[in-house]
Length: 268
Image 1 (spheres, rainbow, N blue to C red):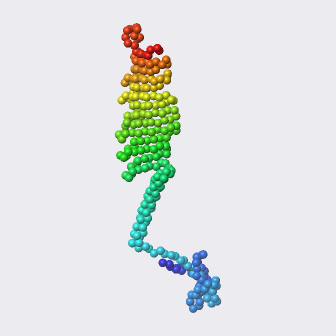
Image 2 (spheres, one colour):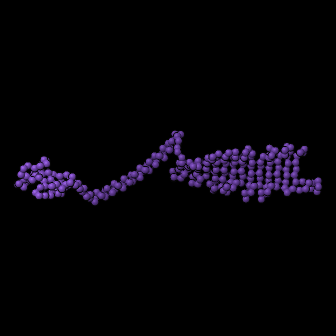
Image 3 (spheres, rainbow, N blue to C red):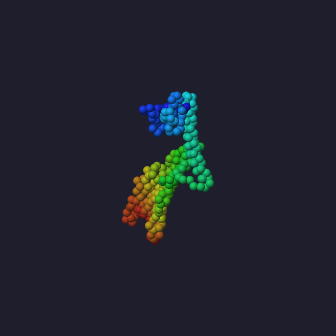
């Protein structure tokens, strides 16, 4: 509702002075008959007195009824819920866009994750370190792959955690290992600077078998006891003869008449 209020009408020595000070005002002329007449001219006709009525116009908003306030509250709550739903739809659209890019052979920016209908992770791609991870239906991770500075590594585990198979390469080294506990291998096959090696360990993770390339370029086998001490060694000599050595060593048979600690092929 708009109200019109007369704020100031100040008479000084029989003259009218406007108190509006820049506010809207209404110029009127008051005749001897006491009638108030509006006059747009700055001065009134002779026989009338000039007044400037300072006006203040206010727009007053009516108070909303209680039922209107309740309705407005419901509208605000619905708007908030709509914003939440909009955000979720936007997320879903982004995930769908990624899926469509994959389907079309496009590019997808890492990191990202693929989940099943229950929300469990199936496949996850990492950016740092570069690699991926696979999970079984029960939810546990069972396979990993990482890109190294000089190569790459791949690791798998059984659903119970072990055994674990690891294979990878970096620089001039490449290996394949089977572990039964964290970071402890029971068997490994490796290539180091072009030289192959096969090693076996007992249930205490002590090395008991090693098959390598010998100094002559031929094969060499070493067998150890439970403490890892080499007790038998077989290989090919520089003269191209086979040789088997056992430990601890014994005196030569010609001296005491008992079997020797080594045997070697004829002519070497």
